[in-house]
View 1 (tube, one colour):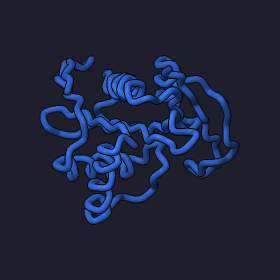
View 2 (view 1 turned 90 degrees about the horizontal axis):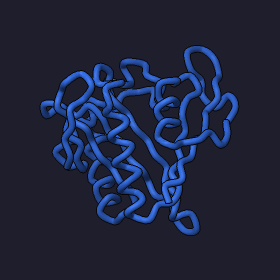
View 3 (view 1 turned 90 degrees about the vertical axis):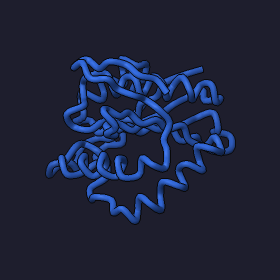
View 4 (view 1 turned 45 degrees about the vertical axis):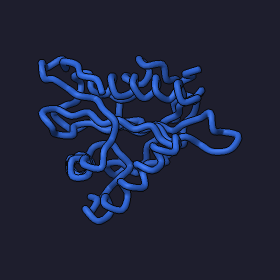
Length: 176
């Protein structure tokens, strides 16, 4: 667990995921869906879906298949980031995902979550971390570049966003 003061003066705790985070994670994801943020998910999760998902994810973390951290402010989950390890000959590669709640963006939470993920991933043997990002999500792309990710490709028209098709950008960081 680590704590820092965000750019807006609030205290932020970054820690490992726990079963008790179920409702907080559910609200985080669903608030992002309701907002219409540039994420892949289009519909809200049900509590039953999260109840089924979270124990499986915690087991993956225990087996070393996933690294995952949450950020919270005053006990509210405001961020979630993960790296899921590939298997077999690609077990040195992980795919990252991150979400930060509206009202808690651009204050350092995403940066801290990603730095912690990359550091822990490296400790667990990852050499390469990949991610995919909607080409319209310029704040995220800027952050990823700042943290060492480089664009390595695009999937043209992979995302239907706001009435048009946009590219899915593939970015990679070498953490070895």
